[in-house]
Length: 52
Length: 388
Image 1 (tube, rainbow over the protein chains, first blue to last red):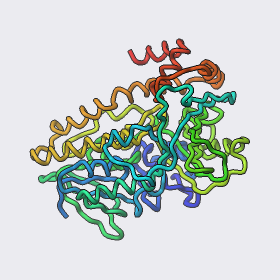
Image 2: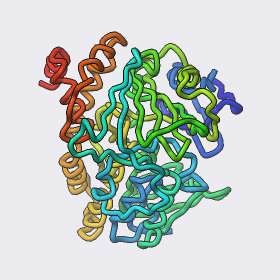
Image 3: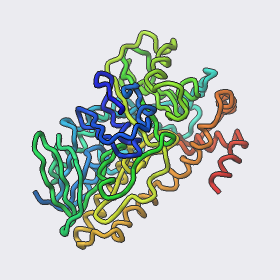
């Protein structure tokens, strides 16, 4: 299961736009990941490396 | 609550859609403050306001641009200014926070109901049209309408609700990171730095904001990158040009650099701006395409509501109109980007050298691209093989 480091995250929403399984919702204050398939796409995208 | 038109997202596309609609409209945005946070380098061409028919307020413009520098890895500077460009109208660096809020204000003043801090959850088709479920503080609200316009940016969920896939492969999205910096020397010029060393698949930029401040950022294609966008920017800051600069704001974001979506409408739905990937893949610029597509969608929605026809067939007019405005241009820049992202740093250096003496009629992506292709026929062949 991927995890978002809240201290690093800029809430830019990019991870939600690349997730091939539509598992990610980025609200104005948090990233919600549901039913993650662990493909790692969001990790490669993140501009700050907030996803592990 | 009930309305005719529901617009998701109060960025430039959403506000322009609401401004150009003549029906009852509700415009929702998940952010408590429209325009914040800034996720943009803020550069626009000079013709923007004329094209969208909105008179700019003074505070929307941070800086007028009088020159462009293009800088390859070798460090030589290709300066395009009024000595090199006949019609030297370059453009502006906007103040997106005021610009976005200003457009939303116009939308509200022309009759739309604006709802900040209202987050789209999902939408469904109903007998009457569409129903949107949204979260407003701790309440879930239901908005019933006839047409939905999705302007909810690169991570669009609204279009997905109606079955249009807006997911972007890593090759077709730029991972962007930016500092607004102060205490650095700036001219009235934008600086573009090309090469894998700065930003694989994209470029690094310095866009002046004021007397001594600028947006300094990078956009990279993650599938070509060796590190995070933040790392590329932090490395970029080490050069003498930016030494001593102070960071006053940090921005991150995603920019679609793919051809626009093949289908940007469905029954009861139109998709605009970043959500429909209407961005120039070569420059990452998407403000004017967002504004124009939003305006067109607002007008088509009004017509559809007058005629009580919300069918896919009727709304297909939207796609025809935006394609007429900028569709071919975006497709062409998409092909050009396919060629450019494959260039090595040494090849970029050579191209830059060939441009040292260029003269242009006017400043635009197309004019610069034409000049590059003229001086580097090999690139032209590569591009032609893609276009045909």
